Amino acid sequence: MSLPLLIVAFVALLGILIVTGTQRTRNRVELEKYSISPEELHELLASHQDLCLVDVRQPLDLPADTEIIPGAIRISPKEVLQNPFLIPTDQDVIVYCTCPGDETSRRVLTRALAMHLSRIKLLKGGLAGWKAKGYPIVPYDKPFRLDVSDTPRNNPITE
Image (cartoon, rainbow, N blue to C red):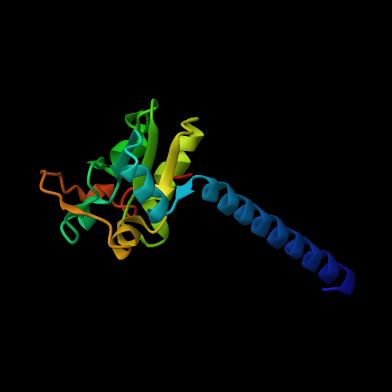
C-alpha cells in the first residue's frame, strides 16, 4: 500500500470517528434535556404536581425487586415500545427502570420522542437512584405477566 493511500485511509477513518463521536455527544446532550434527577422528581411529587410516573422495568426484573415508587403505574416496555401512545399526552410523564445506564427508559424515551411525544423524561439512575436517596417506595403487589420475549435479547428494538 502506498503512502498517499494510507494517508487517505487514515483521514477517512479519522473523519468517521469524529462524526460518530459528535453524533453520540449530540444524542447524549439531547437525552439530558429529557432527564430528571431523583431530587427533582421528589420535589415535583412533594408539590403534588400533576404527572404520570411509569415503571418500565423488564418483567424479569420485577421478581428481584418488587418495589415501586408510590403513585407509579407499571407498563411493560414491550407494550410501550409497540404502542407509545400508551404514554399519556395530557400530562408530564417520567419513566424509570432498573437497567444499567437506564437502557430501557432510554429506549422508551427515544421511541416516544420519535412519535413527537415531548412531555416525557427519564429518571436518572432509575429505581436504584431513587432508593439510594432514601425516597419512599412501596411493594408492587399487582399481578404481571412474566413474558421473557419482553427482554432486549429476545426482542431487539431498532432505534
